[in-house]
Image (cartoon, rainbow, N blue to C red; front, side, top):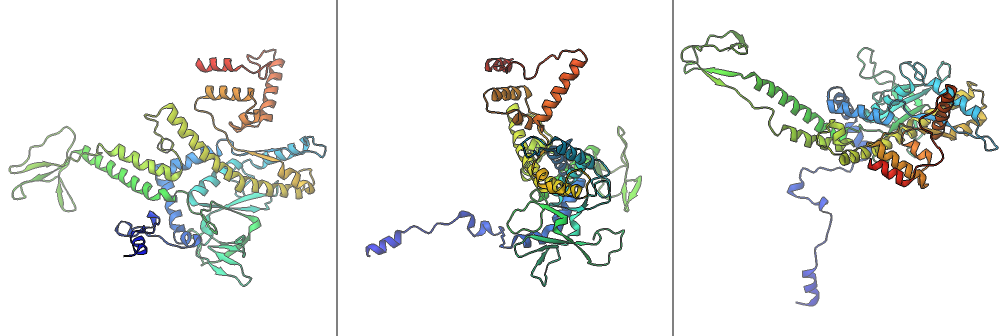
Length: 484
């Protein structure tokens, strides 16, 4: 045997990814190479309908939606502050104030949506719930005959037909109801003229209303390139949510049965039993709590005594809920509303991770909904003369804006406040950095403090503290406060 033969014999086998292995253990690991749209199209409607059913009937799905609205939108929603400047660099206080006051008035109940049922904060909450539950949101920008000549129309994603897929003579393609150009940029949306699931209206087949993309917001979170429609964010947890709900229901029914202490009457010949009633031709006897009955001769009682829920029920439910919480992107303690056995460190870490996730969704809300609505609204009111500002200055007031989402209070406010003071003293933080943590603007904070000081002087009162006094506290003073 030559040297080359020995080398070939001892040469190592070709390596590959273990995850790509085949064999008995991977027979049920079915994969496909379909495009993103092809995968979405086959399950879009079913996933959406199942997510809606869970949101109506499953306590944890409803909890997740409520958590999302509370943490992303909050009490006040995303607020607007315009900071446009004049040519000389000074703040355009008059123009900024006009736009901010008009925006606030437009956002009141009865004005900002065509049906008059939502305020601007309500619209943000509806956007978040629909985005998470349905996976996508359709909002039509309407020139409406209200005092601002502009309103929003929320449209359910059911009206965008996922089965409408054709190629048009001009080369555009319609994919699941969305008309795309050669770059996959949306050109128009082909909507059903009536809701396909509305039994109260006459459904005359598939007739569409074409709405151009400049009049429509179609918001979804793509998971793959070239994806045209969105999928519910609850998709990874749908199976576990449904199964856990069924398991809890079975345990609850079993516990009720076990508490009833039922049983069966038996006899060698099957006779001697005098029933109180018949249930589907089966003789039964009703019993009242605290009573004993004498059985006929030859009849014995066989007790049916199930022991439910089992001792493993709580641990099993927690394990399943942890997986569900991971699929939904929230902590177990938040989803299950379970603070039993948590420490300060663990709940703080969980809260910070949750907040990072909520901030990501807040950023999506601002970029894909709040800002586009503001720009369309601003163009409308400037072109129609609702505000005393020329349309030529649109860019000035459209670009110089700050959208501020809700902030979050700390788990231990004293420690965090003292840490902020140290950061301010050492020049690591600015006042705006601190205000951002609470969803505030430093200018508004200064205005409020100044107004309170003036009010105290008008009433002849002396404030118990003096913000921004002679000096910030020293590090030693902060350390002593922390120790106390």
